Amino acid sequence: MNSQRLRTNTEALAERLPADSTLVLRRAGWQEYESLLEAVGEEAGLRISFDRGILHIMTTSAQCESYTQFIENLVRLCALRLGLTLRSFGSATIKKQRQQKGSEPDCRSYAQSALLIGQRKQIAHGV
Image (cartoon, rainbow, N blue to C red; front, top):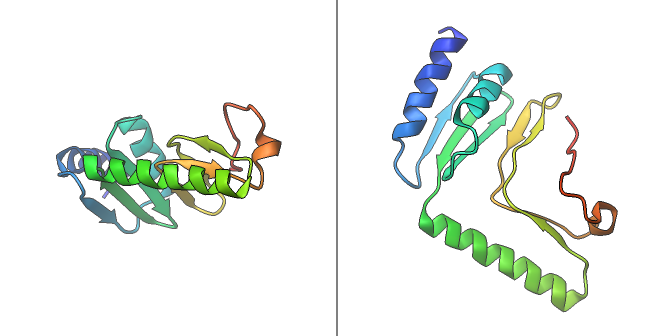
């Protein structure tokens, strides 16, 4: 299957996934992953990850979002209780082409490197 057709078919499938569903595609290429990310953009409720040829497309739900908030609050509370400096960010796409890996975590928190991050708005994760 050519990459354009794979991308079009994958986009159509992703749009039809019900909440809390996962679609796994094997033998996908890095370019298909990049193209899919570009095509869907920052669509709420959709998380895409890539691990050496395995493409995961996951839809989220209100319940998933409430779990995310709970965990984020728990991390903040633990950091406060332990006296740790913490920097938290929302979801973002983290891509490492050399390792053929990419993910979109719901939220990110940094404790050990929080002081190095300072007030930065963007973090380079190393491509």
